[in-house]
Length: 522
Image 1: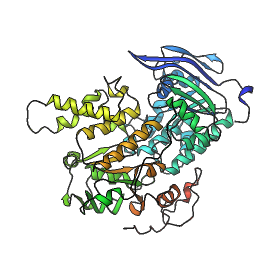
Image 2: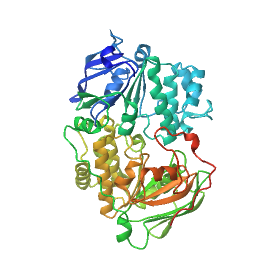
Image 3: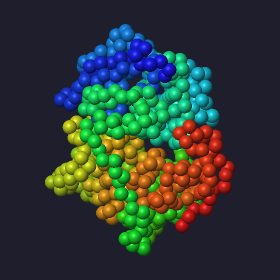
Image 4: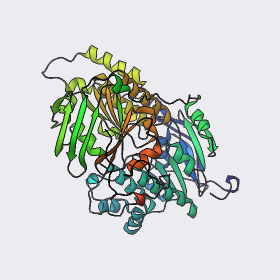
């Protein structure tokens, strides 16, 4: 943005916006002013009202109060079509393509011009898209990019991106950030929701901060502003301490027998000859770029797919999982990054957490309701789950929904937790709570396998880190060795000591997919 804010009139100006769900106030007094050519961050802890405000601006829901001006003209936005006509277009956290339709049919459904869409898809780093592919068969990361390309193809005045880079691999995320930066060239604006400060600092001009449904501050993005934003988000200064991740914690006190042993595991052409141990009392991290086999590894361990070769041992005994229930009976629970996969959204917090109690019944008979209630209440208290809207889990913020998913398996006393990007799209405060919880689980003798798309989380949570590239385990790092540059080099298939430009705008074409993979360290 080249013109100072004092010389410009807002492209979008929302003030006094409020939204109630019964007795719950999702928004109380939210304001947002966005200038032409600006990338404007919208920030706040989970439950602060960010997504609610975006949905109001884009016509997905109606406000109970407030005013919205577009280029100085008051607009009554009561539907997505009205928002689209006003030049406001969102890309939400979850893909909006209809799963049973192919890509071309989805484009026709929204009146999206095909050729501009194709051009943006290529610009965003995807060169092999077939418009006849059914949406449900396309990986989540690619669907998110297609959603963005579909929005860009109609050239909106204001593009609203809700956690756009969450769950994207580094190469796709970098392309997205490059494209977002260029939106101001034609006088357009972007509202950017992200919990990654590195993205906010590199991309945004200003930030509006929400807390408890109200706007509490607007700040310029300058060096060192992160602490001020966190104070505004949380209302109090949080201590910036790293969660203890003691290297070798699990190995030092663990028995000789690993909790889970993976031996030469293969899943089709996606995962090939992967071997490692996971011990009680350990948090083992998994790092990989998109599509390198990590999805298949977790799915095989969770019983969702059957390996095509190799072996899985649990407590020294061969284990074959034909169904997720087999893994659950072996004490292995899966926490997905996509909360909707794990939760019954129209059910209550208690029902969702208590689900394993019902699933464990072998015979007809009364459920021990007293024990169930006590266990569920203990899990809710332990994770500090906000249950003000517990009539339906879908009313909770994303962070509280993820807490419910984890609480379910704490209540069920699962011995091994498979966490696949569990902090995706979650605010900084809730992330800290989940980091602490995973360390506590390990301290109590549980084992955790933790995939993350945010490399900085490794130092906060893990004892060791497994890196997968091209379907193979290419390296294992201790937590002391696992700094972000080393992990990124390994994730791109480069051996230790190799130099590579893997900054925020690194060229993903530098990925040496045909480079020989280094040997995995024992």
